[in-house]
Length: 119
Image 1 (cartoon, rainbow, N blue to C red):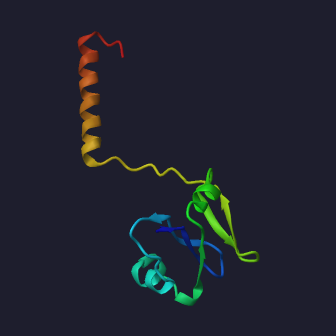
Image 2: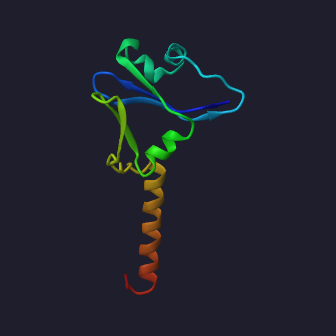
Image 3: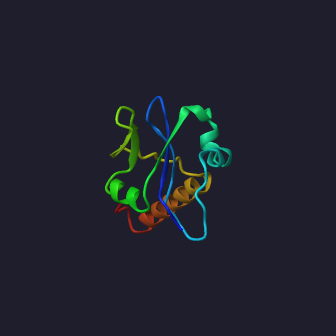
């Protein structure tokens, strides 16, 4: 059996809450209530605040190609795809990484002294 993607969205905003990708194999299509009881992302909302769009198998992949986000147009009840700027979050180096950097710097300074201070 082939099951198309399911897009769960907030009925007031159109923002996607959960996207269940296509599935294939010895499976069955789950109901909205079953998914609500299974996925914690859905449980953050009241069930009557959640809408559902189910696509044909392979349709989501075709429609979303080249985009990284989706929302539902509340007037047309159709999916709209767009690219959301994903900020790059620089992580603070761990204590170990800082210590390694310090030691590498010390080695470089010692080598520099040995070579007569070319650095």
